[in-house]
Image 1 (tube, one colour):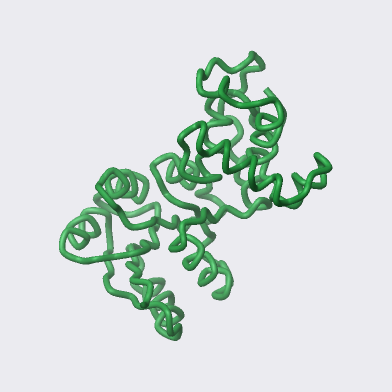
Image 2 (cartoon, helix red, strand yellow):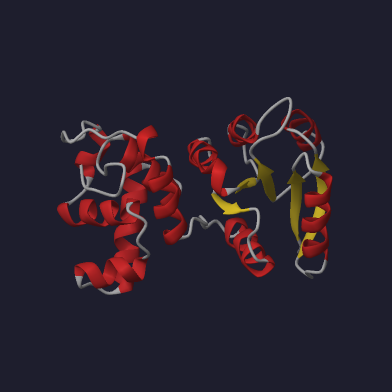
Length: 224
């Protein structure tokens, strides 16, 4: 069964380019397009979609608010934010709004296709290196308190789970975390799963957001 994709971008040429790339894939189908958030919400009322490729800066209704409205609906499609270097702060807002990840608009076609498949399968797509770059760019927008976080949910974590959460929030992959803590990747994956369950989080994206919002990790990657 093909992955049903919707393209939401106010630039027709960009939509055309993405559509050509996706149309060449046997497991993907572009089933809808929209030039702004208002149109996207209207189309989604009548169209079954698996993954939405969402631009952030659009007329009428931007991608962040559109994402928030989409993700508040029952059984919503996955949303993959498309951003550019100078709009990275919108990506973070989009993740908070419920997006499953973000990619740069000039991403190589192969990476975009992999991201769509990953999001469709339930994974989050925020590459560790991109996460670090993103957080560094808008560090002033994030909490910078050095005080112990007061978020009650964090008390549910064991000391090891807390260590793993901090490293996830700093943008490290499971392999990098395993090397840092001298653990197997399987063990790290288990810890991440327990963190998601205990904190009622959807994926690694939400782990990053919560860690920064609570001050567990400071802007710039330091520990709170």
